[in-house]
Every structure is written in structure tokens, then in C-alpha cells.
Length: 183
Image (cartoon, rainbow, N blue to C red; front, side, top):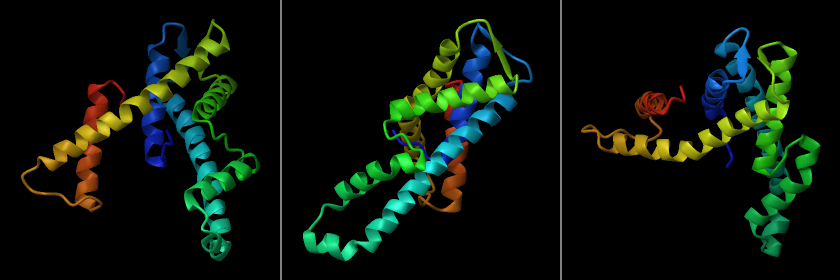
């Protein structure tokens, strides 16, 4: 599943919580620094994909007349162009491989900055990070659905996309994450 920039802090928090709760990992400076490293790396990865997709849209716009004339399926063309340009932008399209790579990057920076210590293989620690990402992604859609249902049951109807809706959504989303131990 593709993740957006608003999810980066939540995933980073989940990673730091899972690392601090791991019996074979100790943190030298605390969860905030670990979460900050994870958030930055996740946001960089998201930005790389956004830049790739922006370039794909530019190419499609430049060739819109040709695509219309040939009756090309635009969704398929989008993916073909994205697949071709992905290596140039450093984007891994397989989400499992991508999250594994992001996990390695996070681990490397944590080790480099002496933010964590462990006496097991690096792969075991990387797996904690990877599992935190996957766990968040699995629960994200369920959390979002519960929050939307709660908002729909409000006496006063909130308009999706409005500032008030976004504030209420964020508050309820945080509460759901806390219930699951992810914030």
C-alpha cells in the first residue's frame, strides 16, 4: 500500500515504540530521536515517489493528444511510464521491497548516530522496523474507517475537507492510535 506524508510521523512513532519495547534493543537517547530519524527517511522516500509521479504526469500531459488519438488507457500508461522512470528517481515499486529498503536505511542511520544498541543480528533489528511499518499499514485503513464512522455519527454534520472536519479527524485518529499503542 502506498503511504502519504501525513502517515510518516505515525509510522515513525510506531517504529520507535516497537524498538523501545524490543527485549534485545536499547536506546541511548530515547524514542524521540529514533522517531525523528525514521520520519525523515520515510518522508524522503515519499518525496522521491511524489517527484517521480509528477514527472510521469508531465510526460503524459506532453503526449495527451497522441494518447487520446490512440485511445490509450491512461492508467496503464501511467504505470508503464512510472515503471520505466522509477530507477532514475531511486524508487522501488514493490512495496514489500521498498519498506525493507527503508527499514535498512533507518537502521543504518540509527547505528551511525549511536541511537540504538543491540547484541543480535542487524537483520533481527531491521525486521522489527519492517514489522512496525507493515503493522501500521495493516491497521491504518481500519482506523480510518472507524474515525470516519464516528464523525458520521456526530449530531452536527461535518463537511469532509473542511478545516473543522480535519481537526476532528486528526483528534479522533490520534485517540485510535493511542488505543492500539501506536502513539
